[in-house]
Length: 182
Image (tube, rainbow, N blue to C red; front, top):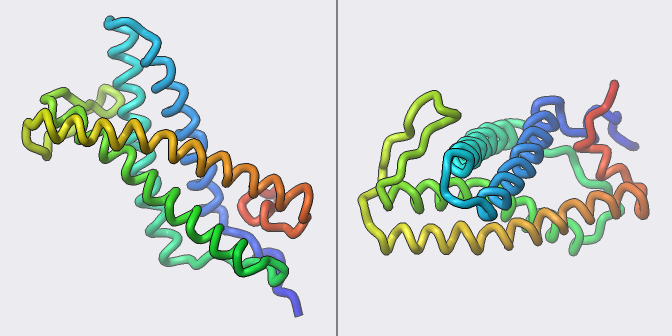
């Protein structure tokens, strides 16, 4: 016997957090790519502040999403999914969670360890919780830089898998996280 549709979908809070984080990720990547192309100046400084603020927002929203997810289990996967698909989905989701924590943390450590300020949307300054240490800064920067490429691969895989479920398998996995008018 099949479960009602409402139990086969994520709730509105999980869906809202998912898509808000996705939008923030697009903004963070766009800002980072833009900042890399700019010479030093007011525009680069402003866009860097925006990038850091969006990164911190991603960190906070991911913490909220993880807390919500722990209290509200995911709807069951369709029985038709193979063990390999289930494990791949689990590993991909877990790694995406880890990266959405690790990227803001490594970015913060990279700048804080160089005594650079981090303000949150020009509202308040984030305290420096790491020692001044160029080696630590370089390591965090390397992790942040390499993490972006891992993120791109995983996000592309996640999007491709969602579209594969939606248009080829038509197994309603995609609809579990898609906003609905119901």
